[in-house]
Image 1 (cartoon, rainbow, N blue to C red):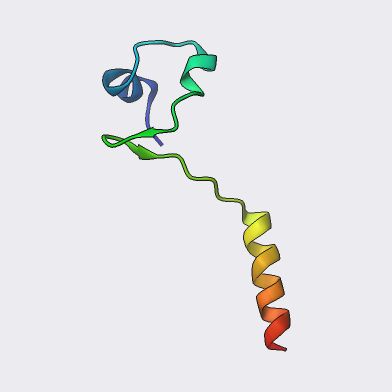
Image 2: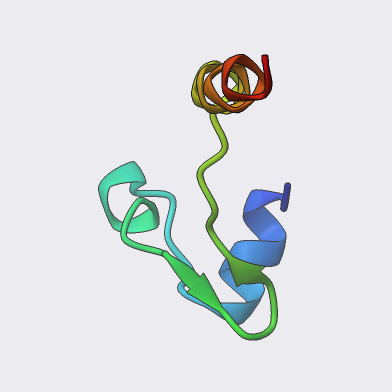
Length: 52
């Protein structure tokens, strides 16, 4: 996770949350990635059930 100052230094100097939400990623910081523990456990459960 990056601080607001780090994001402002390489992207836009703003504190407006609506503008900051538009940042999906840049090469200097990396890219946003969604990870849901609920979905991971759901799909792992299907895989484990298939093994049984």
